[in-house]
Image 1 (cartoon, each protein chain N blue to C red):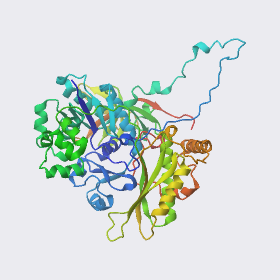
Image 2: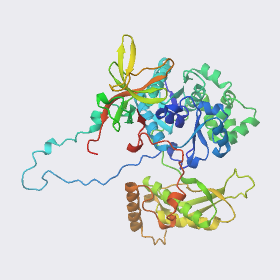
Image 3: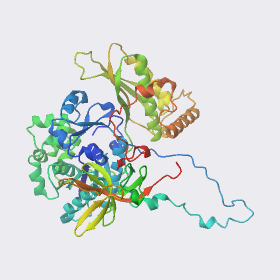
Image 4: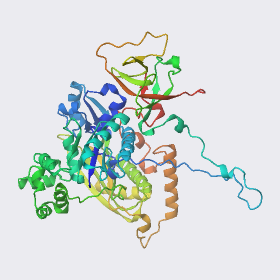
Length: 150
Length: 421
Protein backbone atom coordinates (compact mmCIF):
# COMPACT_ATOMS: atom_id res chain seq x y z
CA UNK A 1 0.00 0.00 0.00
CA UNK A 2 1.43 3.32 -1.02
CA UNK A 3 0.91 6.57 0.80
CA UNK A 4 2.07 9.34 -1.42
CA UNK A 5 2.48 11.80 1.33
CA UNK A 6 5.42 10.26 3.08
CA UNK A 7 7.02 7.01 4.03
CA UNK A 8 6.31 7.09 7.71
CA UNK A 9 7.40 4.01 9.57
CA UNK A 10 5.02 1.41 8.22
CA UNK A 11 2.88 3.97 6.48
CA UNK A 12 0.97 4.84 9.63
CA UNK A 13 -0.35 8.34 10.06
CA UNK A 14 1.51 10.02 12.86
CA UNK A 15 -0.91 10.87 15.64
CA UNK A 16 -0.66 14.53 16.35
CA UNK A 17 0.00 15.00 19.98
CA UNK A 18 -2.28 17.61 21.35
CA UNK A 19 0.10 19.85 23.05
CA UNK A 20 -1.95 22.64 24.34
CA UNK A 21 0.10 24.41 26.99
CA UNK A 22 -0.96 23.47 30.47
CA UNK A 23 -0.61 26.16 33.06
CA UNK A 24 -0.21 24.56 36.40
CA UNK A 25 -1.28 26.62 39.33
CA UNK A 26 -0.47 25.31 42.75
CA UNK A 27 -3.57 25.39 44.84
CA UNK A 28 -2.14 23.90 47.98
CA UNK A 29 0.12 26.03 50.19
CA UNK A 30 3.71 25.63 49.21
CA UNK A 31 5.01 28.56 51.20
CA UNK A 32 7.16 27.76 54.16
CA UNK A 33 4.89 29.08 56.87
CA UNK A 34 1.16 28.57 57.24
CA UNK A 35 -0.95 25.49 57.07
CA UNK A 36 -1.11 22.95 54.23
CA UNK A 37 -4.43 22.79 52.43
CA UNK A 38 -6.58 20.14 54.06
CA UNK A 39 -7.54 19.06 50.53
CA UNK A 40 -3.98 18.21 49.46
CA UNK A 41 -4.24 14.58 50.44
CA UNK A 42 -7.53 14.15 48.63
CA UNK A 43 -6.74 15.42 45.13
CA UNK A 44 -8.38 13.16 42.56
CA UNK A 45 -8.92 13.27 38.84
CA UNK A 46 -12.08 15.14 37.77
CA UNK A 47 -14.89 12.82 36.75
CA UNK A 48 -14.61 11.93 33.09
CA UNK A 49 -17.72 11.63 30.92
CA UNK A 50 -16.02 9.03 28.76
CA UNK A 51 -16.04 6.68 31.72
CA UNK A 52 -19.83 6.55 31.89
CA UNK A 53 -20.68 7.00 28.23
CA UNK A 54 -18.14 4.66 26.66
CA UNK A 55 -17.49 1.25 28.18
CA UNK A 56 -15.40 -0.14 25.33
CA UNK A 57 -13.70 2.66 23.36
CA UNK A 58 -12.29 0.23 20.77
CA UNK A 59 -15.74 -0.87 19.63
CA UNK A 60 -17.74 2.30 20.30
CA UNK A 61 -18.81 4.75 17.58
CA UNK A 62 -20.95 7.88 17.59
CA UNK A 63 -23.84 8.41 15.17
CA UNK A 64 -25.96 11.50 14.58
CA UNK A 65 -29.73 10.96 14.68
CA UNK A 66 -31.77 12.40 11.83
CA UNK A 67 -35.10 10.55 12.13
CA UNK A 68 -38.00 10.61 14.57
CA UNK A 69 -38.79 6.91 14.94
CA UNK A 70 -37.54 6.80 18.54
CA UNK A 71 -38.94 10.03 19.99
CA UNK A 72 -41.16 8.20 22.53
CA UNK A 73 -37.97 7.09 24.28
CA UNK A 74 -36.59 10.60 23.95
CA UNK A 75 -34.14 10.09 21.13
CA UNK A 76 -34.64 13.17 18.97
CA UNK A 77 -33.28 14.37 15.65
CA UNK A 78 -29.96 16.10 16.24
CA UNK A 79 -29.01 13.85 19.16
CA UNK A 80 -25.80 11.86 19.14
CA UNK A 81 -26.14 8.17 20.00
CA UNK A 82 -23.32 6.12 21.46
CA UNK A 83 -23.21 2.73 19.71
CA UNK A 84 -21.17 -0.20 21.01
CA UNK A 85 -20.52 -3.02 18.55
CA UNK A 86 -19.09 -5.40 21.15
CA UNK A 87 -22.39 -5.87 23.04
CA UNK A 88 -24.75 -8.68 22.06
CA UNK A 89 -28.26 -7.27 21.54
CA UNK A 90 -30.87 -8.65 23.90
CA UNK A 91 -34.59 -8.23 24.68
CA UNK A 92 -35.42 -4.49 24.98
CA UNK A 93 -32.09 -3.31 23.55
CA UNK A 94 -32.17 -0.23 21.38
CA UNK A 95 -30.06 -0.98 18.35
CA UNK A 96 -28.68 0.58 15.22
CA UNK A 97 -29.98 -1.72 12.51
CA UNK A 98 -29.06 -1.68 8.84
CA UNK A 99 -32.36 -2.28 7.06
CA UNK A 100 -31.99 -2.63 3.31
CA UNK A 101 -28.74 -0.64 3.47
CA UNK A 102 -30.26 2.14 5.54
CA UNK A 103 -28.98 2.78 9.10
CA UNK A 104 -31.99 3.04 11.43
CA UNK A 105 -32.63 3.00 15.17
CA UNK A 106 -35.02 0.34 16.43
CA UNK A 107 -36.15 -1.33 19.65
CA UNK A 108 -35.66 -5.10 19.87
CA UNK A 109 -38.39 -7.21 21.47
CA UNK A 110 -38.42 -10.95 21.81
CA UNK A 111 -41.61 -12.72 20.75
CA UNK A 112 -41.22 -16.33 21.64
CA UNK A 113 -38.13 -17.41 19.77
CA UNK A 114 -37.91 -14.55 17.30
CA UNK A 115 -36.63 -11.04 17.74
CA UNK A 116 -38.85 -8.26 16.45
CA UNK A 117 -37.84 -4.69 15.65
CA UNK A 118 -40.07 -1.75 16.63
CA UNK A 119 -40.25 1.98 16.26
CA UNK A 120 -40.75 4.00 19.43
CA UNK A 121 -43.11 6.59 18.01
CA UNK A 122 -46.85 6.11 18.53
CA UNK A 123 -47.60 8.43 15.63
CA UNK A 124 -45.82 6.24 13.11
CA UNK A 125 -47.38 3.13 11.59
CA UNK A 126 -45.95 -0.05 13.12
CA UNK A 127 -42.65 -1.11 11.62
CA UNK A 128 -42.98 -4.09 9.34
CA UNK A 129 -40.62 -5.73 6.92
CA UNK A 130 -41.25 -7.46 3.65
CA UNK A 131 -40.05 -10.92 2.87
CA UNK A 132 -36.44 -10.73 1.74
CA UNK A 133 -35.59 -7.50 3.55
CA UNK A 134 -31.99 -7.63 4.66
CA UNK A 135 -31.45 -6.71 8.28
CA UNK A 136 -28.20 -6.64 10.21
CA UNK A 137 -27.62 -5.30 13.69
CA UNK A 138 -24.74 -2.82 13.49
CA UNK A 139 -24.44 -2.19 17.22
CA UNK A 140 -26.26 -1.56 20.48
CA UNK A 141 -27.14 1.98 21.55
CA UNK A 142 -25.82 2.55 25.06
CA UNK A 143 -26.39 6.29 25.56
CA UNK A 144 -27.59 9.49 23.96
CA UNK A 145 -26.01 12.92 24.08
CA UNK A 146 -28.08 16.08 23.62
CA UNK A 147 -26.98 19.68 23.81
CA UNK A 148 -29.68 21.52 25.81
CA UNK A 149 -28.21 24.99 25.41
CA UNK A 150 -27.77 25.43 21.68
CA UNK B 1 6.89 -22.89 20.02
CA UNK B 2 8.08 -19.83 18.12
CA UNK B 3 5.51 -18.47 15.76
CA UNK B 4 4.21 -15.39 14.06
CA UNK B 5 0.79 -14.38 12.82
CA UNK B 6 0.05 -11.70 10.28
CA UNK B 7 -3.39 -10.14 10.29
CA UNK B 8 -4.47 -7.70 7.61
CA UNK B 9 -7.66 -5.96 6.58
CA UNK B 10 -9.28 -7.18 3.37
CA UNK B 11 -9.45 -4.31 0.84
CA UNK B 12 -8.83 -2.27 3.97
CA UNK B 13 -9.61 1.27 2.80
CA UNK B 14 -12.75 0.08 0.99
CA UNK B 15 -13.84 -1.93 4.02
CA UNK B 16 -13.52 1.16 6.24
CA UNK B 17 -15.84 3.00 3.85
CA UNK B 18 -18.37 0.17 3.91
CA UNK B 19 -18.62 0.13 7.70
CA UNK B 20 -20.31 3.54 7.68
CA UNK B 21 -21.98 3.46 4.29
CA UNK B 22 -23.89 0.18 3.95
CA UNK B 23 -24.96 1.11 0.41
CA UNK B 24 -21.42 0.24 -0.69
CA UNK B 25 -21.90 -3.36 0.44
CA UNK B 26 -21.64 -5.94 -2.39
CA UNK B 27 -20.86 -3.21 -4.92
CA UNK B 28 -17.59 -2.36 -6.68
CA UNK B 29 -15.71 0.29 -4.70
CA UNK B 30 -12.22 1.72 -5.21
CA UNK B 31 -10.23 4.21 -3.15
CA UNK B 32 -7.84 6.58 -4.93
CA UNK B 33 -4.43 7.83 -3.86
CA UNK B 34 -3.67 11.49 -3.08
CA UNK B 35 -5.03 13.91 -5.67
CA UNK B 36 -7.23 11.08 -6.92
CA UNK B 37 -4.27 9.75 -8.88
CA UNK B 38 -4.72 6.01 -8.98
CA UNK B 39 -6.59 3.11 -7.40
CA UNK B 40 -4.92 2.01 -4.17
CA UNK B 41 -7.69 -0.20 -2.77
CA UNK B 42 -10.32 -2.27 -4.55
CA UNK B 43 -13.14 -4.47 -3.39
CA UNK B 44 -13.47 -7.98 -4.85
CA UNK B 45 -16.23 -6.64 -7.14
CA UNK B 46 -13.88 -3.95 -8.50
CA UNK B 47 -11.07 -6.47 -8.99
CA UNK B 48 -13.48 -8.64 -10.97
CA UNK B 49 -13.95 -5.73 -13.40
CA UNK B 50 -10.24 -5.84 -14.12
CA UNK B 51 -9.25 -2.76 -12.11
CA UNK B 52 -5.65 -3.21 -11.04
CA UNK B 53 -3.69 -1.87 -8.10
CA UNK B 54 -2.12 1.46 -9.07
CA UNK B 55 -4.31 1.91 -12.15
CA UNK B 56 -4.43 5.68 -12.92
CA UNK B 57 -7.96 6.93 -12.36
CA UNK B 58 -8.26 8.88 -15.61
CA UNK B 59 -7.61 5.66 -17.52
CA UNK B 60 -10.39 3.75 -15.76
CA UNK B 61 -12.85 6.60 -15.21
CA UNK B 62 -15.05 5.49 -18.10
CA UNK B 63 -15.00 1.87 -16.99
CA UNK B 64 -16.01 3.03 -13.50
CA UNK B 65 -18.90 5.11 -14.80
CA UNK B 66 -20.17 2.32 -17.05
CA UNK B 67 -20.10 -0.24 -14.27
CA UNK B 68 -21.35 2.00 -11.48
CA UNK B 69 -18.11 1.73 -9.53
CA UNK B 70 -17.94 4.02 -6.50
CA UNK B 71 -14.57 5.82 -6.58
CA UNK B 72 -13.60 7.59 -3.38
CA UNK B 73 -10.73 9.87 -2.41
CA UNK B 74 -8.51 8.65 0.42
CA UNK B 75 -9.91 9.35 3.88
CA UNK B 76 -6.76 8.85 5.94
CA UNK B 77 -8.33 10.21 9.14
CA UNK B 78 -10.87 7.39 9.00
CA UNK B 79 -8.42 4.66 7.99
CA UNK B 80 -5.97 5.70 10.70
CA UNK B 81 -8.67 5.59 13.39
CA UNK B 82 -9.94 2.18 12.27
CA UNK B 83 -6.37 0.88 12.14
CA UNK B 84 -5.81 2.03 15.72
CA UNK B 85 -8.95 0.20 16.85
CA UNK B 86 -7.85 -3.01 15.14
CA UNK B 87 -4.47 -2.80 16.80
CA UNK B 88 -6.17 -2.30 20.18
CA UNK B 89 -7.91 -5.62 19.59
CA UNK B 90 -4.71 -7.34 18.47
CA UNK B 91 -3.11 -6.18 21.72
CA UNK B 92 -5.69 -8.23 23.63
CA UNK B 93 -4.77 -11.36 21.69
CA UNK B 94 -0.99 -11.18 21.85
CA UNK B 95 1.50 -9.58 24.25
CA UNK B 96 3.82 -8.45 21.44
CA UNK B 97 2.74 -6.98 18.12
CA UNK B 98 4.44 -5.12 15.31
CA UNK B 99 2.39 -2.66 13.30
CA UNK B 100 3.83 -3.27 9.86
CA UNK B 101 1.59 -0.97 7.83
CA UNK B 102 -1.73 0.80 8.20
CA UNK B 103 -3.58 -2.50 7.71
CA UNK B 104 -1.01 -5.20 8.51
CA UNK B 105 0.18 -6.27 11.94
CA UNK B 106 2.44 -9.11 13.04
CA UNK B 107 1.52 -10.84 16.29
CA UNK B 108 3.69 -13.04 18.48
CA UNK B 109 2.00 -16.45 18.90
CA UNK B 110 4.79 -18.20 20.88
CA UNK B 111 2.46 -18.70 23.83
CA UNK B 112 -0.43 -20.16 21.85
CA UNK B 113 -0.29 -23.98 21.75
CA UNK B 114 0.12 -25.20 18.18
CA UNK B 115 -3.13 -27.14 18.30
CA UNK B 116 -5.07 -24.03 19.27
CA UNK B 117 -3.64 -21.53 16.80
CA UNK B 118 -6.32 -21.89 14.14
CA UNK B 119 -9.03 -21.41 16.74
CA UNK B 120 -7.15 -18.41 18.15
CA UNK B 121 -6.87 -16.84 14.70
CA UNK B 122 -10.58 -17.44 14.08
CA UNK B 123 -11.42 -15.66 17.34
CA UNK B 124 -9.14 -12.77 16.38
CA UNK B 125 -10.91 -12.44 13.04
CA UNK B 126 -14.42 -12.61 14.43
CA UNK B 127 -13.69 -10.16 17.24
CA UNK B 128 -12.14 -7.69 14.79
CA UNK B 129 -15.13 -8.04 12.45
CA UNK B 130 -17.66 -7.70 15.28
CA UNK B 131 -16.03 -4.74 17.02
CA UNK B 132 -14.88 -2.72 14.01
CA UNK B 133 -16.76 -4.14 11.03
CA UNK B 134 -13.50 -4.80 9.17
CA UNK B 135 -13.00 -8.25 7.62
CA UNK B 136 -9.47 -9.64 7.97
CA UNK B 137 -7.33 -12.62 7.03
CA UNK B 138 -4.78 -14.25 9.32
CA UNK B 139 -1.70 -16.22 8.31
CA UNK B 140 0.44 -18.15 10.79
CA UNK B 141 3.94 -19.52 10.38
CA UNK B 142 7.22 -20.21 12.18
CA UNK B 143 8.81 -17.14 10.52
CA UNK B 144 7.53 -13.72 9.48
CA UNK B 145 8.04 -14.58 5.80
CA UNK B 146 5.95 -17.75 6.16
CA UNK B 147 3.27 -15.86 8.14
CA UNK B 148 3.08 -13.30 5.34
CA UNK B 149 2.89 -16.08 2.75
CA UNK B 150 0.17 -17.84 4.77
CA UNK B 151 -1.76 -14.59 5.01
CA UNK B 152 -1.67 -14.14 1.25
CA UNK B 153 -2.78 -17.71 0.66
CA UNK B 154 -5.54 -17.34 3.30
CA UNK B 155 -7.21 -14.69 1.12
CA UNK B 156 -8.51 -17.45 -1.12
CA UNK B 157 -9.92 -19.52 1.74
CA UNK B 158 -13.47 -19.09 3.06
CA UNK B 159 -12.18 -19.39 6.64
CA UNK B 160 -9.71 -16.53 6.06
CA UNK B 161 -7.18 -18.37 8.23
CA UNK B 162 -4.16 -20.44 7.19
CA UNK B 163 -1.72 -22.02 9.62
CA UNK B 164 1.62 -23.04 8.14
CA UNK B 165 3.19 -24.26 11.38
CA UNK B 166 3.29 -27.81 9.99
CA UNK B 167 6.15 -28.30 7.46
CA UNK B 168 3.96 -30.55 5.30
CA UNK B 169 1.43 -27.74 4.99
CA UNK B 170 4.27 -25.36 4.07
CA UNK B 171 5.35 -27.76 1.35
CA UNK B 172 1.84 -28.12 -0.05
CA UNK B 173 1.13 -24.36 -0.20
CA UNK B 174 4.55 -23.29 -1.47
CA UNK B 175 4.51 -25.79 -4.35
CA UNK B 176 2.35 -23.48 -6.48
CA UNK B 177 2.76 -20.14 -4.68
CA UNK B 178 4.18 -17.59 -7.16
CA UNK B 179 7.69 -16.61 -6.09
CA UNK B 180 6.95 -12.96 -6.97
CA UNK B 181 4.40 -12.90 -4.14
CA UNK B 182 6.99 -13.90 -1.54
CA UNK B 183 7.68 -11.08 0.90
CA UNK B 184 10.85 -9.20 -0.09
CA UNK B 185 11.06 -10.46 -3.67
CA UNK B 186 10.99 -7.33 -5.81
CA UNK B 187 10.95 -6.90 -9.54
CA UNK B 188 14.72 -7.10 -9.90
CA UNK B 189 14.98 -10.33 -7.88
CA UNK B 190 12.04 -11.79 -9.76
CA UNK B 191 13.84 -11.36 -13.09
CA UNK B 192 16.99 -13.04 -11.70
CA UNK B 193 14.95 -15.93 -10.30
CA UNK B 194 13.07 -16.35 -13.58
CA UNK B 195 16.44 -16.68 -15.35
CA UNK B 196 17.24 -19.52 -12.92
CA UNK B 197 13.93 -21.19 -13.76
CA UNK B 198 12.46 -20.46 -10.35
CA UNK B 199 8.74 -19.77 -10.47
CA UNK B 200 7.38 -20.96 -7.15
CA UNK B 201 8.15 -20.34 -3.51
CA UNK B 202 8.90 -24.04 -3.02
CA UNK B 203 11.77 -23.85 -5.52
CA UNK B 204 13.24 -20.79 -3.80
CA UNK B 205 13.01 -22.56 -0.44
CA UNK B 206 15.16 -25.39 -1.85
CA UNK B 207 17.84 -23.04 -3.18
CA UNK B 208 21.27 -23.07 -1.57
CA UNK B 209 21.40 -20.06 0.79
CA UNK B 210 24.82 -19.16 -0.66
CA UNK B 211 23.40 -19.15 -4.16
CA UNK B 212 20.55 -16.92 -3.02
CA UNK B 213 23.09 -14.56 -1.49
CA UNK B 214 25.06 -14.37 -4.74
CA UNK B 215 21.87 -13.63 -6.66
CA UNK B 216 20.03 -11.33 -4.30
CA UNK B 217 22.49 -10.24 -1.60
CA UNK B 218 22.02 -11.08 2.05
CA UNK B 219 18.31 -10.26 1.75
CA UNK B 220 17.81 -13.21 -0.60
CA UNK B 221 19.70 -15.51 1.75
CA UNK B 222 17.49 -14.47 4.63
CA UNK B 223 14.37 -15.15 2.58
CA UNK B 224 15.57 -18.71 1.87
CA UNK B 225 16.22 -19.32 5.58
CA UNK B 226 12.84 -17.90 6.50
CA UNK B 227 11.04 -20.03 3.90
CA UNK B 228 12.73 -23.04 5.52
CA UNK B 229 11.26 -22.08 8.89
CA UNK B 230 14.49 -20.64 10.31
CA UNK B 231 13.61 -17.21 11.69
CA UNK B 232 15.95 -14.37 10.70
CA UNK B 233 13.64 -11.54 11.70
CA UNK B 234 12.19 -10.66 15.07
CA UNK B 235 9.15 -8.55 15.80
CA UNK B 236 9.97 -4.87 15.84
CA UNK B 237 7.45 -3.53 18.28
CA UNK B 238 9.20 -0.19 18.48
CA UNK B 239 9.34 1.70 15.21
CA UNK B 240 12.97 2.12 14.18
CA UNK B 241 14.30 5.65 13.86
CA UNK B 242 13.31 7.04 10.53
CA UNK B 243 15.98 6.70 7.92
CA UNK B 244 14.54 9.11 5.43
CA UNK B 245 11.67 11.43 4.93
CA UNK B 246 9.85 12.67 1.86
CA UNK B 247 7.08 15.06 0.95
CA UNK B 248 5.82 14.52 -2.57
CA UNK B 249 2.58 15.37 -4.29
CA UNK B 250 0.94 15.02 -7.65
CA UNK B 251 -0.24 18.48 -8.62
CA UNK B 252 -3.98 19.06 -8.76
CA UNK B 253 -3.32 20.95 -12.01
CA UNK B 254 -0.17 20.76 -14.15
CA UNK B 255 2.48 23.29 -13.20
CA UNK B 256 3.97 25.32 -16.05
CA UNK B 257 5.46 28.42 -14.40
CA UNK B 258 8.60 28.70 -12.38
CA UNK B 259 7.00 30.73 -9.63
CA UNK B 260 4.34 28.08 -9.11
CA UNK B 261 7.00 25.39 -8.94
CA UNK B 262 9.11 27.39 -6.47
CA UNK B 263 6.12 27.95 -4.25
CA UNK B 264 5.01 24.33 -4.40
CA UNK B 265 8.48 23.03 -3.52
CA UNK B 266 8.86 25.66 -0.77
CA UNK B 267 5.58 24.36 0.64
CA UNK B 268 6.96 20.80 0.67
CA UNK B 269 10.16 22.03 2.33
CA UNK B 270 8.05 23.69 5.04
CA UNK B 271 6.12 20.46 5.57
CA UNK B 272 9.38 18.50 5.65
CA UNK B 273 10.74 20.84 8.32
CA UNK B 274 7.60 20.28 10.40
CA UNK B 275 7.95 16.51 10.12
CA UNK B 276 11.63 16.56 11.04
CA UNK B 277 11.00 18.76 14.07
CA UNK B 278 8.16 16.56 15.24
CA UNK B 279 10.51 13.57 15.15
CA UNK B 280 13.42 15.46 16.67
CA UNK B 281 15.53 14.88 13.55
CA UNK B 282 17.57 16.96 11.12
CA UNK B 283 19.11 16.53 7.69
CA UNK B 284 22.20 17.81 5.95
CA UNK B 285 20.91 17.64 2.38
CA UNK B 286 17.71 17.76 0.38
CA UNK B 287 16.89 16.18 -2.95
CA UNK B 288 14.29 17.90 -5.10
CA UNK B 289 12.69 16.17 -8.06
CA UNK B 290 10.09 17.15 -10.63
CA UNK B 291 8.60 15.30 -13.55
CA UNK B 292 5.91 15.42 -16.21
CA UNK B 293 3.10 12.88 -16.46
CA UNK B 294 4.11 9.46 -17.70
CA UNK B 295 0.61 8.98 -19.06
CA UNK B 296 0.33 12.09 -21.22
CA UNK B 297 0.99 10.83 -24.72
CA UNK B 298 2.60 13.19 -27.19
CA UNK B 299 3.70 15.70 -24.55
CA UNK B 300 7.39 16.40 -24.02
CA UNK B 301 8.62 14.45 -21.02
CA UNK B 302 11.08 15.44 -18.35
CA UNK B 303 12.17 13.76 -15.16
CA UNK B 304 14.96 15.45 -13.19
CA UNK B 305 16.29 15.71 -9.67
CA UNK B 306 19.02 17.51 -7.80
CA UNK B 307 20.55 17.20 -4.37
CA UNK B 308 21.69 20.26 -2.47
CA UNK B 309 23.93 19.93 0.57
CA UNK B 310 23.28 22.06 3.60
CA UNK B 311 26.18 23.61 5.52
CA UNK B 312 25.09 21.62 8.54
CA UNK B 313 22.30 19.32 9.65
CA UNK B 314 19.16 21.33 10.24
CA UNK B 315 15.39 21.14 10.50
CA UNK B 316 14.92 24.88 10.15
CA UNK B 317 12.22 25.48 7.56
CA UNK B 318 13.92 28.63 6.29
CA UNK B 319 17.20 26.81 5.63
CA UNK B 320 15.35 23.93 3.94
CA UNK B 321 13.43 26.37 1.73
CA UNK B 322 16.65 28.12 0.70
CA UNK B 323 18.20 24.79 -0.27
CA UNK B 324 15.06 23.66 -2.08
CA UNK B 325 14.93 26.93 -4.01
CA UNK B 326 18.52 26.47 -5.15
CA UNK B 327 17.58 23.03 -6.44
CA UNK B 328 14.57 24.42 -8.33
CA UNK B 329 16.82 27.12 -9.82
CA UNK B 330 19.15 24.42 -11.06
CA UNK B 331 16.41 22.14 -12.39
CA UNK B 332 13.82 24.47 -13.85
CA UNK B 333 13.21 24.39 -17.56
CA UNK B 334 10.05 25.83 -19.04
CA UNK B 335 8.00 24.34 -21.84
CA UNK B 336 6.94 21.31 -19.84
CA UNK B 337 3.73 20.55 -18.00
CA UNK B 338 4.96 19.18 -14.69
CA UNK B 339 2.64 16.73 -12.94
CA UNK B 340 4.57 15.99 -9.77
CA UNK B 341 7.38 17.28 -7.60
CA UNK B 342 8.77 16.43 -4.25
CA UNK B 343 11.51 16.81 -1.71
CA UNK B 344 13.37 13.86 -0.20
CA UNK B 345 16.04 13.48 2.45
CA UNK B 346 18.01 10.47 3.60
CA UNK B 347 20.39 9.81 6.47
CA UNK B 348 18.45 11.74 9.06
CA UNK B 349 20.42 12.64 12.16
CA UNK B 350 19.67 13.80 15.65
CA UNK B 351 20.59 17.50 15.67
CA UNK B 352 22.50 17.26 18.95
CA UNK B 353 24.85 14.69 17.41
CA UNK B 354 25.55 16.58 14.23
CA UNK B 355 28.71 18.53 13.61
CA UNK B 356 28.57 22.26 13.61
CA UNK B 357 30.24 23.80 10.62
CA UNK B 358 33.30 25.87 11.33
CA UNK B 359 32.08 29.09 9.80
CA UNK B 360 28.65 28.74 11.19
CA UNK B 361 27.02 32.12 11.45
CA UNK B 362 23.44 31.00 11.84
CA UNK B 363 21.66 32.07 14.91
CA UNK B 364 20.45 28.67 16.05
CA UNK B 365 18.59 29.61 19.16
CA UNK B 366 16.66 32.27 17.33
CA UNK B 367 15.77 29.98 14.41
CA UNK B 368 14.63 27.25 16.77
CA UNK B 369 12.39 29.72 18.58
CA UNK B 370 10.79 30.92 15.36
CA UNK B 371 10.17 27.34 14.21
CA UNK B 372 8.69 26.33 17.56
CA UNK B 373 6.33 29.30 17.45
CA UNK B 374 5.30 28.47 13.89
CA UNK B 375 4.64 24.80 14.69
CA UNK B 376 2.62 25.77 17.72
CA UNK B 377 0.45 28.18 15.76
CA UNK B 378 -0.12 25.62 13.02
CA UNK B 379 -1.03 22.91 15.48
CA UNK B 380 -3.46 25.16 17.26
CA UNK B 381 -5.16 26.93 14.37
CA UNK B 382 -4.69 24.35 11.65
CA UNK B 383 -2.04 23.49 9.12
CA UNK B 384 -0.59 26.40 7.11
CA UNK B 385 -1.91 29.13 9.40
CA UNK B 386 1.58 30.56 9.60
CA UNK B 387 3.64 29.95 6.46
CA UNK B 388 6.95 31.22 5.18
CA UNK B 389 6.29 33.88 2.52
CA UNK B 390 8.26 31.81 -0.02
CA UNK B 391 5.39 29.34 -0.09
CA UNK B 392 3.13 32.05 -1.49
CA UNK B 393 -0.38 32.82 -0.41
CA UNK B 394 -2.17 31.08 -3.24
CA UNK B 395 -0.58 27.81 -2.28
CA UNK B 396 -3.00 26.66 0.35
CA UNK B 397 -5.68 26.09 -2.24
CA UNK B 398 -3.64 25.60 -5.41
CA UNK B 399 -1.23 22.92 -4.27
CA UNK B 400 -3.20 21.38 -1.48
CA UNK B 401 -4.09 17.77 -2.02
CA UNK B 402 -7.41 17.29 -3.74
CA UNK B 403 -9.90 15.14 -1.91
CA UNK B 404 -12.90 15.75 -4.10
CA UNK B 405 -14.63 12.48 -3.50
CA UNK B 406 -13.71 11.91 0.12
CA UNK B 407 -16.28 10.40 2.46
CA UNK B 408 -16.96 12.11 5.82
CA UNK B 409 -14.36 11.67 8.55
CA UNK B 410 -16.92 9.62 10.47
CA UNK B 411 -14.91 8.89 13.60
CA UNK B 412 -12.76 11.96 14.14
CA UNK B 413 -15.04 14.97 13.49
CA UNK B 414 -18.16 15.96 15.42
CA UNK B 415 -19.65 17.61 12.34
CA UNK B 416 -19.04 14.59 10.13
CA UNK B 417 -20.54 11.78 12.24
CA UNK B 418 -22.41 9.08 10.30
CA UNK B 419 -26.16 9.68 10.15
CA UNK B 420 -28.96 7.28 11.12
CA UNK B 421 -32.73 7.52 11.05
